[in-house]
Image (cartoon, rainbow, N blue to C red):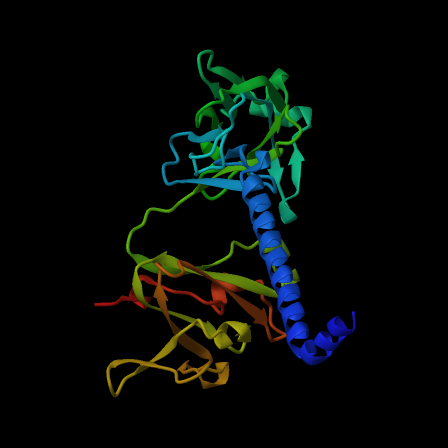
Length: 349
C-alpha cells in the first residue's frame, strides 16, 4: 500500500492528465452520438403526413387564385387540382388512399380577405341566369350551378385520391364573363378541401377572374372615375398611369388647384425627367424634384416619369386640393387635374 501511495505521489501529474483525456473522450463520444441520434430523428419525420395533401389553388393558410383574361366574350374556366403529395414534388406520396370532402361557396372577398357568402334570395335568383359553377372532373362529371334554387354552396362528398403513387383529383371552376371588364360583379368561389384523416391539413382557396388589357405598346394616364354628385366631398383624387413598354410618360396639372403627393416624388424607385429645350432632350433630375421646381405654362406644370412595364406596369398618384375658395365641381371645364395624351408617351429607341 505504501508503495502504491508513493507511486501516486511521483506520477500524480501524469495520472491527472490521463484521467482528463479519458473524461473528455467520453464526453466527445457522447456528444457525437447525441448529434447522430437527433439527425436520424429529423430525417425520419421530414416527410410528414401533413405535407402530402396539397393543391394548386388551395393551401393551409388560404390562397387567392386570380385567372386573367382579355376576352370578355367567354366565361373563365379555372382548373383546381388536389394532390396526394407536396405539390409540385411528386417523389414522396401517400401510400394510402386520400378521402376528403370539397365544399364550394360563391361570395365576395372584401378588405382584409374577409369572405362573405351570398345569402340574399334576390341575388341567388339573378345568379340562376348566369354561369357560376364547379365541376368534379371524372367519370361522372358532377356539375353544380350556383344560384336559383340550388343556393350558394355545395359539397362534393367522398372524394378520393388513390394512394401508392403520385395522383390527383380535378375540379373545374367556371366564372361568368361579367367578371371581366371595367365593372365586374366581384364574385369569387371559395373552395375548402377537408380530409377524413385528421393528420392531414384542411386546404382553402379563393378563385377569381379579372380583365387583363391587351398588351399593346404604350402608356396613358387617367383620373379615377368620380361621382359628380359627391365631388365637393373629395379631399383629393387618384391618378393612374399604366401601360406596356419602356420609355417616358409626361403628365401635367395645375399646381394652384391641386398638389402632388410628395411621397411619389421622393420615392427612390422613381426616375423623373424634364425637357431641356437647349439640348432638345430629356434630362434626369439629380435628386427628388420638388413641385415648386417643376416648369410649365404658368401654374400648369409638367413631370416626366421613366417607365418599364417589365418592372412595374401601373402607378397610382394622389393629388390633393389646395384652394379652399375654388369650385372643384368644374373639373371637366377647368382641366386642373392631371392629364396625358398619346403625344406624351415616348418609347425608348
